[in-house]
Length: 93
Image 1 (cartoon, rainbow, N blue to C red):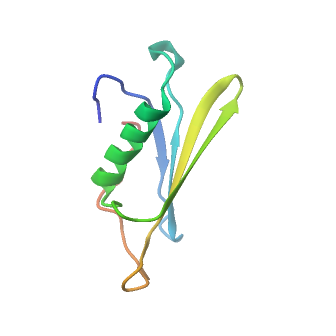
Image 2 (tube, rainbow, N blue to C red):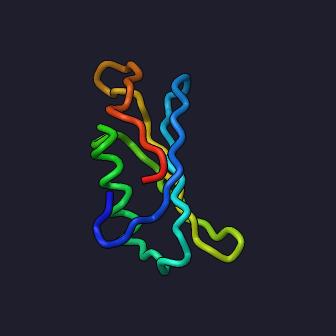
């Protein structure tokens, strides 16, 4: 997932839920992430997981003086109305 900047990400996959969540906690030693860099990273993770086109929510907040980003995708296929399994799981890319 490296394109010149590699934030450390913690991704949780709770298989019994209809949502897939991603928490991005950038390494402050690498400098601040712009919103464009966050969105680029989210888009690449989304593609790798096979979640392209799924509804998602992105939330930014300040925690202990640094910005974090959280993303949640729906795992429900809108055509079949059934939950699907993501293409792969990732930990700390």
